[in-house]
Picture (tube, one colour):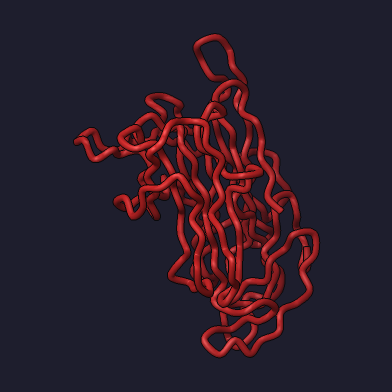
Length: 272
């Protein structure tokens, strides 16, 4: 389950994935465990014409991974309307969070909300020599967007082979609507949801974007991330997928590469 936070009068911020892995540094079948990290997003407060504090998210490293290198970037181009204006460069500042427990660390990432810079998808990536990288994304949308994912479901995780997978949006603007994936060019123009009319595959992974034609630069459209696990439900370890997943609770999802649970927001445990 993924939750969101209303950002004052300006933005809605939704967590896509918060990840925590437990265990030794070398996992099953010799795989390295990923860096332990979770991300929290925070609302802004309207203070006249200045947003204080600015939209931000915090990336926390687990015990023993406090020496990991953390970087934060905009993950996708979600604003260029192919009119030569290009995507504005986001102003991002990264500061260390003080007074945390020993062997842990936190990075607060603030986004300057000018020219709609705070709209879109941002991520934290944690890198450490003896671990696999961990990347967690978070989405920021305007609260007056004319396209929003149904039920504010800004991400969904499905399994390879699942059927009836849908990218479901609510519309309040006038058509036609353009659909894009991963910030690329328009692949569909329609006023209907995107339905994968076959078994889902990893090639369907990505950020799905829906906006009114020729109005993408307004940053008032919808974003939805689809994650397709490389194995069928309850299995991990592609390509054979012979591993059997641990039981994951409270919205946790079995990682298709490690078999461990990926925790939802505000959860921090082995099986969630």
